[in-house]
Amino acid sequence: MTVVDYRALCGMPETGRVAWVERERPHSGSPQWALSVIESVETHASVSTRRAGGLDLPAFDFAVWFLQTSVRLGDLTPSYAAYWLLRFAAVAQRAPHHGLPDLLRPDRVARHTIESFPLTLERYREVSVKWAREADEDKPADEEFRLMQDASWTLPSLAWVRDAIVDPMLRDEVDTWLAAH
Image (cartoon, rainbow, N blue to C red; front, top):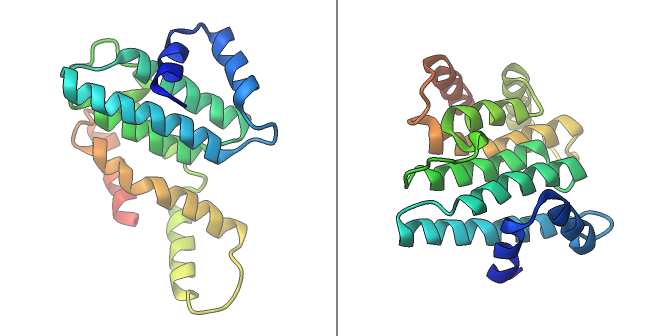
């Protein structure tokens, strides 16, 4: 994906974006394809934010749309898409952000991320302890372990928005999750 492709997609209406995804996305779905698109958008958004001192709002709008679409299509898990939303939210904190998509505001993205975790905090802790205890055993990972890994990938990234969270109860909840990791 080139910057030209990305810029054209930002300006497209929903129907054009959907048609592009249907045309370009591998038929069986592909996390790699989805990541190649979102990495390109994130790189451009990050560089343009640093250079211009303001946000390229169409890039952030497109990123939110694309990540939600990738989850809906099954290309990314909700938790992994939340990781990318946290990345965009962290970039957005570097510049004024009038008009930023609501999902990228610190409180909203933190709540969304916690809700995207496939395990409750209690179950996450239990599975983490179980797998730490059994780490030396030669046995295949089960579904709960994969779910814990899915949350573990995203969990530390909550720290990127933690200090900007306004709601003290949400900040405490984020701190509890971070401490569990």
